Amino acid sequence: MNTIMKDIIASNRIKKEACESCKKDLQGILTSEQPEKFEDAFYSAAKGYILRRKEH
Image (cartoon, rainbow, N blue to C red):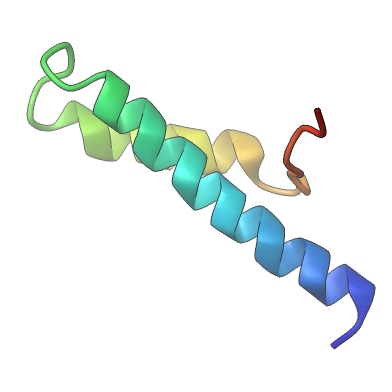
């Protein structure tokens, strides 16, 4: 597997983790329909970007 494909796979995993973390943080604030809308907006905004973990 080439480096670009590994970066895309890692980025998709990071996007999923980030989205789930945000939705968890927003529990009790969002209505029952809003988490799905948030997820749609999150993935629309992140589309086309390669996310990487911040190095310490």
